Length: 37
Image 1 (cartoon, one colour):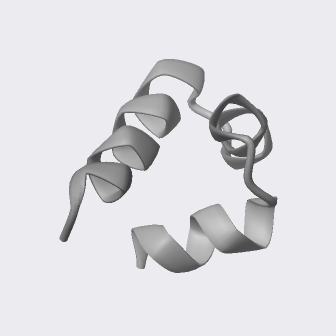
Image 2: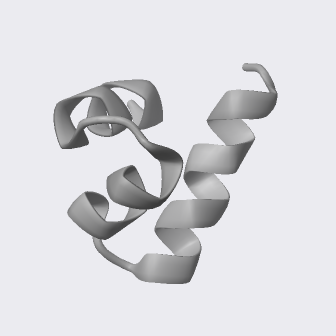
């Protein structure tokens, strides 16, 4: 796990929505979902 993974988790916690969290992190939703797994 690296700092980017933590950033994704924080964005997901803040937005409570994978698509919105992905947009906030400037990645696609499938990328975010894959990293969370």
